[in-house]
Image (cartoon, rainbow, N blue to C red; front, side, top):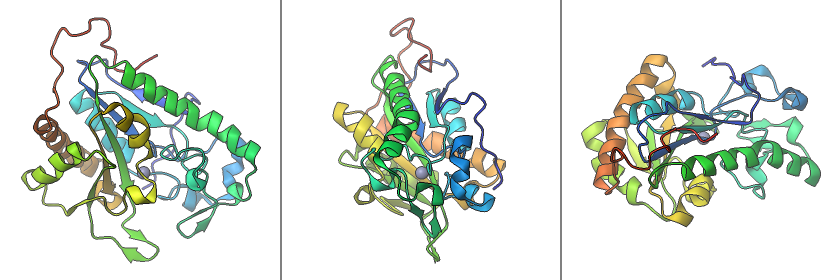
Length: 271
Ligand SMILES: [Zn+2]
């Protein structure tokens, strides 16, 4: 997996959308990019680490972009590596700027002072959080929030046999609908709250942006060896699009939006 970081604009977060039908959906990819802004001096890491799952979720952005296009919802991505700031963590979480990730020390994050942590929060997390809030608020109808991630097949030397994780926090409505209908859409090994779950602090985006307002939500984790090629990414996105659409209808979500609602608010991305 040698996809390069992509950050043409220099913005810490971006919204990708096609100005579509105003479908009540918002996709999120917090770990889309392994880009480390120049001033961080690569955080003292070798290239191999910077391209590994430690720095980002390989394949996740490609799948999320195809999903967003297929289901016509905007996609909000972080354009900065989670090693600089993990946008799926609140500023007070120690692993928002991890000093260690799996087996790797992150030299540039060692002994970060309060000031440095606050600066990264302001530069990376706050713009991401704001963009996501604004994108949600700009949808013509309250959207379902769907976050897309990938995980490594081997962690701390142990093989993970789960292939697709369906994660949720206190509100499991959409996750339940997906889990109940999984066999209709995939023969992959699907599991609830695996390979990790809310007890590991991974549901921050859901807790911050969906739970307080009652938006339907789910976090989808895909084992990254299943989405290593463009062909596999396309196949996975196509399957997930059908599965998600089915689960949304089952959970009582209006999909797609009734035409003619909220004229003038059709733009997928909020400017
Ligand atoms: Zn992730």
